[in-house]
Amino acid sequence: MTYILIMFILHTLPWYWKASILAYDVLKCWQQTTAPARTSSDVYATTVHVFVCQILVGLVLLGPSAVLSVQDRLRTNSFISEMLLMLSTYTLLIRSIGTKAVSAENACFCLQFCSCYFFFCYARAAEKNSKILLGNAVVRVCSSAAMCVFPIMYSHSPPDCLHLSPYVLLFLFAGELSACACAAVSCTLKLAESLVHSLYQRLCEHCV
Image (cartoon, rainbow, N blue to C red; front, side, top):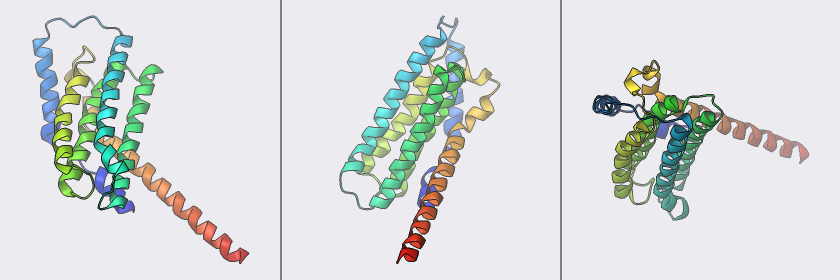
């Protein structure tokens, strides 16, 4: 089971995707003569709207596989749980904007790479194993399109430029870091489940 968990989320987003996000931000900054006056509340509201759209697209792509019959239910359930866990980590990031723990600008920069990585997981799963998700071809096309659309939407939320941020190197690996955190949580939960199950079996043996 642990192998299945790691197979879906522990990989690296190709560098050409990361370079494309940075290149788009540079192009946006060159064409932007004067930064529009936007408050942190405005940026936060826009970010939340984009994130809700990301959640809806992610759930729509998962929906048929969650409720209908699939060829490999174990792998499908593992993939769904990983994607939902990743969304929960992004939700914590959105929540941290509201509590002022993270600036809305830095969160948007981070979510550009996280959203691209999130849908890259969909595209990679659909490409590597056709038994995981229903509508495999549709999932692959939609997730590839989402990898382009959502980083662009997050890019236009803050008026600042990503490539000028001092944390740009950290943002480049934001998706991979979130995936590693999710893998650690998944493995911890699996280990706890195994320990509880083993303890329960021993208690049953002693009672008998």
